[in-house]
Image (cartoon, rainbow, N blue to C red):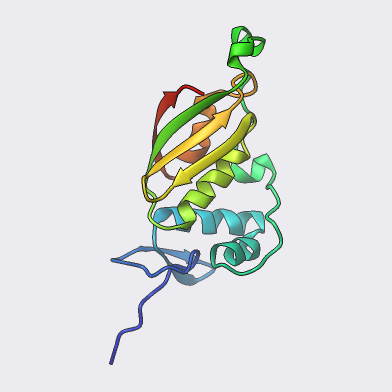
Length: 165
């Protein structure tokens, strides 16, 4: 008899190794990584679980609506220093960074969605294959450290390396 492979309760991918087990409403669920377990928990808390499951498991769904800042734990961005605010040379910057802790195809999507919701972020990209990301932002509207703290809040580690825009 062939053992049935276990899949992640969020992204639907096969779980290699022990995975991450968490209990929700008396049921133990299995996740491929801590990121998927955290996203599942946040989606439940914000009432977006059905939409998130439909998206991560490749089913058609209505677009996800941004959750209120209080529900996502995202803090209000801090004001940029006055010296940065009016300078034309500061109109846009690009930062490259590495992301540690990604284990499945849902992780980069979650990180990109989180980054794009931060005030001052113009665009973001993250690659599971390389473990690197890039964020284009307006430093007069937000601080890079504050932007990346949103990723850290997802349970992923990160390092930043600025590049010229």
